[in-house]
Length: 63
Image (cartoon, rainbow, N blue to C red; front, side, top):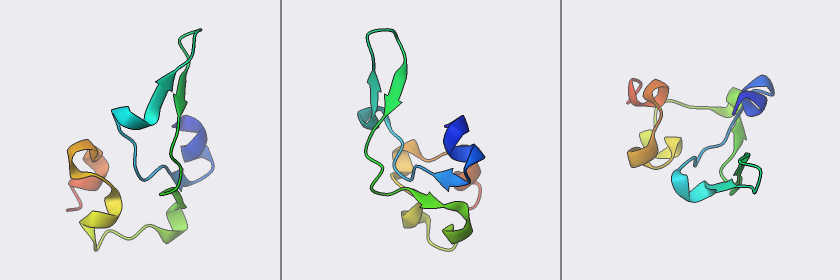
């Protein structure tokens, strides 16, 4: 997530279903089909923030 943030990107669908753990314990993110740049982020539509169950605190306070 730090890498995505450093590139001004949002995963868009981060949940336990989209995380895999490698043999060495490293977490790998999958399912980037909803990823987008922060310059395209809109707070007007909470549906665009991903699944409400897994929504980040930052996105939730905008809802």
